[in-house]
Length: 278
Ligand code: SAM
Image (cartoon, rainbow, N blue to C red; front, side, top):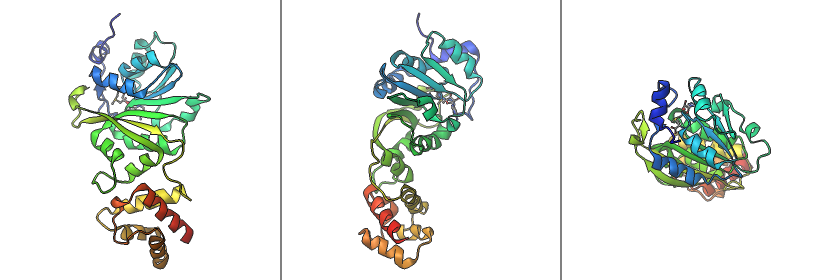
């Protein structure tokens, strides 16, 4: 039997899109295929999908994976998903806010877990932060997000996109841009373009630091005032001026540099030198 398209399913159930839930559903099969292919899902994998919508991407994942958990917040989509995906016995729906789910409970003893999603724009950054910071045992994250956010995640030092989000993601993952996606690939059509990126979790974080908390605090403080120097930004750490100055000297970092010029390795060195002097 020929699969119904996203538009057909929406019409069949008279589904009304919710703007506040970031509901822009994918209607472009080439993008769908690129997400599935790049996620490298096989019969050995557990897949966690965030925001299945009417299940278009879910269906393709179900054909490839050992099992798919799909986390959906919208109550109106639950009966639609249960009906449209009833032929699959490897499908389990989790009717919850993805921000409140303990992913390790879903992962359990699974050896290989991959997260795949066309994320709702309004919670992209909180979801990525949660997935990376809460130490979940997944291998990769293949996600479609707003283009600007994807460019910030992949950014290199000394570019205007480089910031705390680039460092957070690059600390934990290898970042690969899969493709750009036009806003015409969705219904309803969003105002902005999207990007598919693949984040592959590193076995160890990219840099070794004495205190992860302090490292991220230094990073956040450095980007809080983008137009000011790093020195001005880091005054907010509340250290004695002489100690902060010594930390800069020990780390071999010029006091006049701006946060956006520092590599991950330099942030690590500076935060370790600050750690020693606090
Ligand atoms: N996967 C579908 C597709 O590609 O067509 C839909 C993607 S749509 C951009 C985002 C989906 O996430 C919607 O189904 C929306 O209801 C759901 N959603 C929004 N906020 C959520 C949250 N906090 N937790 C789980 N799902 C959420």
